[in-house]
Length: 523
Image (cartoon, rainbow, N blue to C red):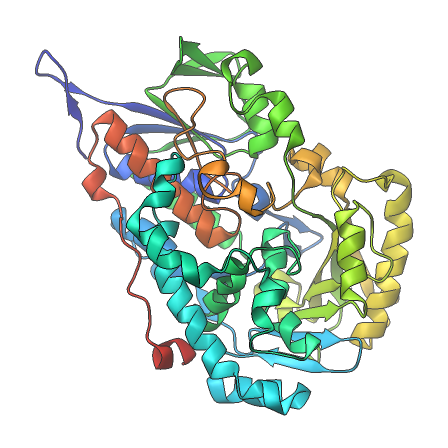
């Protein structure tokens, strides 16, 4: 571990406080420790993971939020910087098929990274469109290669838009098109466009509004794989916390940060449980819109005032059912997305802050892959319904039980199983619960929306622009939501902090792995 040499010639250790033990906070804590800092990680809950936490109830284990993992190469570099191997710390099982899509018109689509099988799946829906699958895949590979250097560097002001990587990549991004409009160049059939664009939901956005840049989200699945961590996605933050602790990071649970203390513009300490922790730098991983106003007085924030935070656009929310089921459901895929018959109406209702009448439903039946999540002979069902966030008119206290019945009816119809009599344990989370229980602003589970005016330097910056010595990681900063990009934000924030503190920034990962060639990506 490197340290900084003070004027007296003695070694001077830098103190870094990380607020929030979500994936970005854990990665930042690991990297700052690898760079030579003394690191304290504060988490308000009694568990690590943030939205990637889990809970166990009556012998069944459920992830609260993410249920699969994409692009492990990014996190592998974080582990390698700490002298560890992700694949030795977490058992990751690659899924093929990655998931099944079910359309109300009767079409099904098993997403697979095998190109010939993928073409065959597309041909079941539209043979003419199926011929365009290889060209579509190749374009996404090229687009991702152009976006890679942009993904891995900070955007700290308008000048960053003029850098050569942006100039070269701009024509490929087609920012004047939405994801759906871009896909019309390849696929005429609406079911196939949805098959390659519903991934915009990972960002909490609609393919009819999401910038065309985000067609690369599907490529991350097809090019690098969809993985299930054995034990659930929370196995990843648990492993990160274990490694961080072994490296010497002081992890404090049930320790909510109360305020960042300043000398002028410079962050100097963090108050927690009545204690004041000295800090040469503070890395904030909490939900941006709910955390920053609590930690930093409004008077100190010139760009991101309370009024500005309130005025921004936020992602959709989700209605959740976590069901412990008696018996196995071996005819239900590990991941299944049941797409609404009127997807446009579904999206419009979500944009209006409503609970859709005919909702799209995502179901994870992980017990077909992972027997550790449920008692023998039983199954865990994770049910997610995209809904409007709390900017809309819904009264979720009244609507929640009614909506539960609607979703269970639809779930039983779509799976072909009468679910209700088989439920042995259950938990429901509404958009209001995401706000009150998890501290998520407006229940917007995917954070700030990813429209063009809220990306790159228009998003809160990794070196927070309103004060000095505060850095941001997580879905509310650049590059955005989703586990791989959140880990990327941790790499960016940690490198900036290490450079500013005079620590060993060269110990931190810099470049992403080499982009796979077409055949490699398809295998």
